[in-house]
Length: 377
Figure 1 (tube, rainbow, N blue to C red):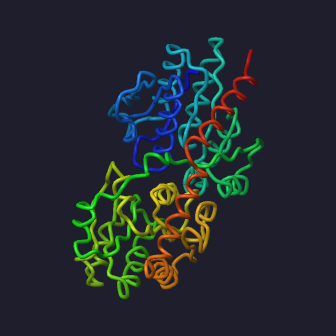
Figure 2: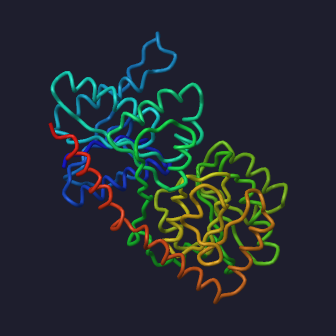
Figure 3: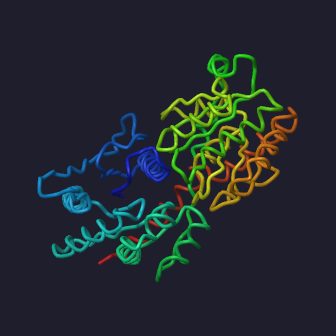
């Protein structure tokens, strides 16, 4: 199959999933065409089956905001025309689904029928999509999709609750490459972070309000009072200055390290003893799944799709949003006893196996075949 994939090229979960899916499909012999405004961050190395098409948005003094959606739709038309594309798979509804719909209608005037699948990832539905500014277009373009998928059961329910969707939504969970995250910890790396053998507690995100970075720091502070620990904060974003100030207020600057955005997360997960994700909402929680694939137990909130990954008291714990005391105490349960920690680590890996890329990619392939079969003219 020749598949066009449209995604955001950044560190966010939707871009990571789309890129990893494309790479896995390319390994299985499909031709994959990534169409976005810059090369996706996870698109590294060479593959004969992967092609990248950059969307260029001309700037004119007339436009306060360059019309990316129009440029994207035009590029989709061009890529489909010239590369024998069988179908388009767009990740994140805004503005990718509406651009795909526009491209589809243009191509139909030329006798080309190109189906498109929309994968919903979370904030495109729960946050941005509900905005009255976008809602009618989001709702319309989702309904015009030839198939719709969501990355969790929770997101599927949220979509039906907030939009008038007239079609089935297929749940295909996010996935993880188990082999990639099954790394042996690098002792030298661990010693740099925790020179006296302290426990390493990890958080990774885009540091937005919804991630509740202050809660990460306060949970760590609760744990640290009883268990010598270091906090590793991976990522960057608008909440970072507040987080650094809070570390100063609590007097834990020497124990908290902000390392910014990182590419090789598998090396970082491998040295972590515990992963914190106390978000207000996660449609799925891909970073939690990646941590578990590395055998790192997770403490998260009982919110969104997180209970679909984290089994309370088995491979991690789930706390109520904002309840830093309980989540800190859960951390002490996991880290306070070597045997308990070992059993949580084993259970985390076992759970991640269910979401292995080998199990999930065939579900997308099956959906592609079904859509193509339904769109034969």
